[in-house]
Structure formats: structure tokens, C-alpha cells
Length: 322
Image (tube, rainbow, N blue to C red):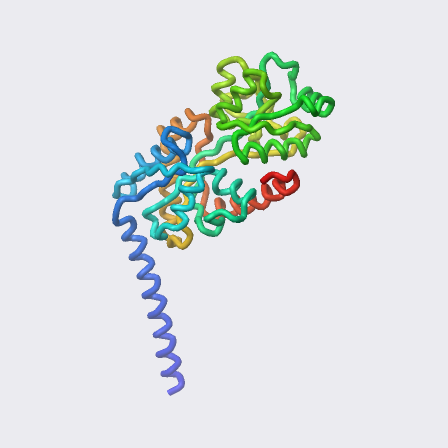
């Protein structure tokens, strides 16, 4: 009798888990069952929007449903990120986000309408290291020249930065090198590079897109890049690490979902992104934006986001940046 009861209990437990896994499998097999929306927290035409439209062009062939891009611009991309964070977590509304709203916003403000726990990272799509630029007519031929000048002339040393991400990275550069550059705010990354071209500021750290435009004009000089390795298009520009500065930093664009989205859906989307990023024409288009096409697993992406928020929050606190 006891054995019979135990057997019935075991059978009920097994039946329960069979049903659970069957339901999970059915959910994943049923996804997506209507069009998928990629929300972009910026205006049309920018880097994040361009990446979203590349994905929106390729993803329907893989998932069998239309993919539309919806621009919801707002201050520091908070509007778009908040909208997705509060959306139904079924994988039909996703965020093509950037390190600014997902990492740097949280490093500076713990009272945003969305928190790190409200979005589930799926995969990075592309990364953009930064380039340290000075005016071509300046006397700084090397990074050491620039740092030495700043130490000797702190009141005359400044940098342009258009957002918290650039500001925090440059302040970390100050701390790592002992330089004493003062922040001068600008509205956009292109404006920051233009300020260096015009001699209005001493230097800037700019992502590779605007930096490349400045370099092609011949009016700025690149002294270093923040990537782990030299850039293919600029093999003569050394990394900060090569120059003895322990600083590696890149801005990324990636796909995220509302927290609570089923793991099967998240993994399916991560796999699709990995396949899309490896397409030759997609690689060429992303590289044409002066970005490095890449992908990673949801677990790797989450680990990176968590670590970066903690690191940049410490930098913000140490430099009283809010």
C-alpha cells in the first residue's frame, strides 16, 4: 500500500513536470504569433535606429512575422526604455537599446522610471570603441604630450562630451592618467568633434562614427583608441593599454526584452541575432558605421551590464557626477 501511494505521488510529480515542459515548448513554438516591434529611444537616422532597421529587415525571414521599428525619442532614451520595460513580456515588444540608457543612466540616477531589473538583455549587435582626438594643429603628438600639458595647465585643459557616457569615460581617463581636463557639455557627439576641430576644447573622446568623419576632414588627430585591440581601419592608432593606461571602454547597441520574457523566447532571439550579425552584408553595413559587429549570449550580456553599472556608478560618485 505504501509503495502504491509513493508510486502514485511520483507519477503525479512526473506528470506535472511533463505538462510544464510541454507548455513551455508550445509557447516557444508559438512565438511569434503576431508582428514584433523594435522600439528605439532615439529619432530616426541615428546609429541605434540604423542597427534596428538592419535587424528589422533580416529578422522576419527567420521568425515568420513582420518586424517594425517604432521610434520613441526622449531625454537620454528614457521614454523608449520605460515603454518597453512596462510592456507585456511575451517577446513581441523589444528594445533596441544602447549602453547609455541601459548602463550609464543607472550609474547616474537610481530614481529612473525603469530599473536594471526591468529589462532582460538578449544580445549585443555592435560595439563602438572611442577615439581620443585633438586638433591637428595642436602641439600634442602623443598621449603623453597631452597628459603632461593638462597636468601643467589645468585651467586651460578641457574636453567636450555630449552625454553622461562620454563624460564618465573621460573622467575615468583623468583618474587613470592624472590628467586634469574639465568637462564642457555639448549637445551631440558630432558637436563634440566639431569643438575640437575649431580649437574650442583641448580634446574629446568620441565614438568611431563621428571620430572617423573628423579624421577624414584632416582637422583632428587620433592619439589613442579605447578598444582592447587596434582598429582595422586605423592600424597606426595605439590602444590606451599599449600606452600604459589601464582603460578599455566601448559603447554598444543591443537587443533587450521586458523582464519576465520566457527564457525560450530570449534564447531564440539571441540565436537569431547571432545568425544575422554573421551575415556578410550585415557585417559590412555595421562596419560601414565604424562599429564592430558582434553578438553574445543573454547570460554574458547580463553579466556585462551588471558589472558596468557598478563600475560607472563608482566613477560617478568619486567625481560627483549626477
